[in-house]
Image 1: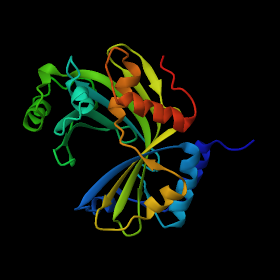
Image 2: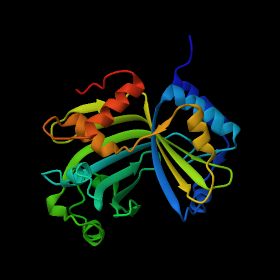
Image 3: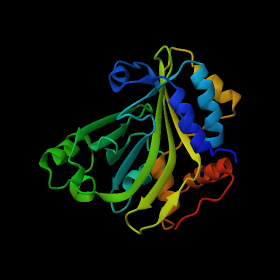
Image 4: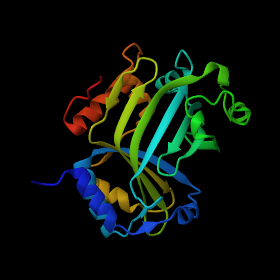
Length: 265
């Protein structure tokens, strides 16, 4: 019986040389360009094999190269952050809490996108117990007030995302990739759940001045760029009352990639 793509992915990762968090911190992409890609696990197997042959290294943290992440996204009662993205507002924000499951390190994170398309992320540590509610934590709420346009009084948990992440770095340290698999979403407001099955979302962060090895590998395996927000896709899937507009096209693109319709329960 042939191995599943997920099993193959785990085996390939074992053969890829590790890079530590300390070494990752030394990678400074001063002229950074971010591009997202969509593929499936069967294609990812081929991409990882070629990346390994090209000398890429995989981040190893807490003894593993496949790290589980859990995030909770916050929004207003009218889903203003979702609507700003849907309406293509140039300056927009996302507020979330995130836990790195293996280490239990947890953070309040604020993602800020400016009118030039650049994204900056601010974060501060919070106790794991405050993932769903940090409103009584003065240090966290002050941090939110300093870096976000939203106050804690108008925010509540909207949905959670769970996924496993692989991080790769090229030999010359001019690009790094985050590769997210096993994506699951839960809507806090109505309890609906959805899974992206074997879809894979990749984000390439590269130095704009350097050539890209991985882009050639993507081209060989027909992995194409697609602007994609996990949060917006999750809201579109789990909240039928929301007018999600163009994000429905993103859902269709995912379904075409995995060759099946995404189930919502």
